Length: 185
Image (cartoon, rainbow, N blue to C red; front, top):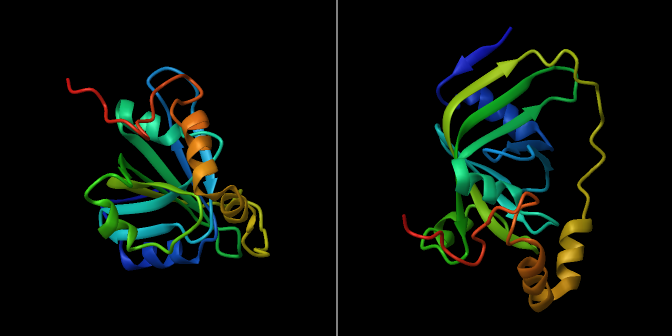
């Protein structure tokens, strides 16, 4: 049975801390829905009603484009061990980029990881937990090191060129504002 919460309590915080993977979901007003698995040491609870994750460079930059368009973001954690549970955090996302005044203070919450692109902050509207009885059991074998290794091998200059080529527009053609500010309305 679903339970709803208005903020992260100690039980929910402990559950999140035990998870090795989480998923983010976002969608434009028109176009493809994006769901991405996230791992490594990239998630932080900033307060009872605010969380964030360190976004690493990848082949797309969908979440930033969707947040720029409508702000909607959902994060999901689910247990793959003996005690089943699914936890969804709903809210309004915002993107903090390296050029933003907030970057240094917020970035200090995370370890330095090769390929850092931006920080996604989620201001929580609501939280829902459900049973998770249908989620299979899996054993965590460890973190993959491939993404940070790939980013390190690229080097900063090639990484910037890659981001300029691959991360300025979503797959639906929406701007990500990775390098420019949105036009004033």
